[in-house]
Image 1 (cartoon, rainbow, N blue to C red):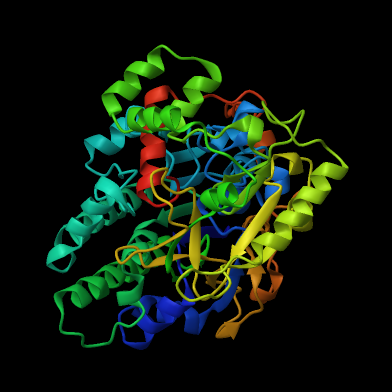
Image 2: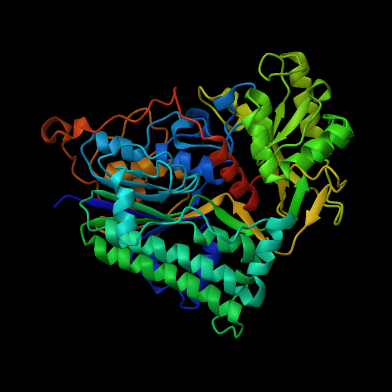
Length: 551
């Protein structure tokens, strides 16, 4: 019997939370997998963020090779200061499911982030986060969308309850968390149940590889990390019950999926990154202005632009009459810097980019000595930043791009990458034009990403009751290929996690030569990607802002 592989992704899954829920009996299925299988920590990317981590998982490659460093992608509009949101066809390497298709294997890929637009594969694919909406290329084959809708099991691509930090979005989240989270958990349960129905429906189709990702774990941990981490077995509050019920539901779905997969299936649980407490936001862009590395445009112009960007109807009208860089800047919602006086600028989520001559559209810093001196100076000064409230250091480490990334797409990386200190742990942002605050503490957004995620393997050939050494997220694609009996291509940078298994599976004959699977239509080449429409880009930027990933 040929082996199959099932992968269940828990977005933001972290042992600090999951161990607690196993301990108090909320997640017995996960407990069984950890006891009977192999568990380890899974190191994410630097920084540990959704698009970079999932692109690394999907390709088995590092960011310097696949080219995705953040929520926006500068190489899509070279030289622009307002790069568009990431999308699958901007990934510079083939995905795991594409490689499996080329080998004649069938895949079901369901709601994995950064799979939009849907690529042709042998099997079925429903895109995940970064999908603009139902009226888009969100399934392959295209007819699958209508099939899922007709059977009441089409997933949702985003929560209705946004997770904003400030302004109207923050108010919506605060309102949703009132009455012990009634509206928030109603919305969370809705997206989870829709995904559960999609899993049940699609699992009946033939497959060699099946994967789905539950994003609800990430969303609830952002909003309620402080409550989750301290939860007990018999908390009396309704909020505590709702939290436990949500994780119990996730555990129940894990059990259902593993049972339905059958005894010949290798089952894996993984996360794109871990989680930890969040103190609030540190406005790194404003610090660059106050430190003399950047300058805002004259007040009258920047206030006018800021006001314009807050009026959605006016914004859409303006977009129709602009082109090029001007359109990109308005669509991005970014406030204006005076590029003739800006030497360095902030890029989400942890980067600083030098306004380099010959690379940026209005670059002023000369390559060579001037560039090197500026980066060294910035590294020294960034490490001196102190939290206004506690006096502790805000940044623990500062890297130059080439110190953590390698590959032919290195030039697209931020020139400088910073890592927040553990205490207090801030996420970095631009800041508000009208505010002089450098740091802001919040009470409705208490958790954020960390580097250390989870990995569990269970099934035939897996070492039982084993704790392994930490693996890296790029190791999972070659591990999956290896367990499916395929040779791992030399160009994949990750290494198969062989220590998790007692034996190696027999090599599988590549089926493309005999079953016609080579007729699967090719994915569009990465060198000629599509673009979001203005409306789609605005929708995605708003969602990312509401999740706290842009401002």
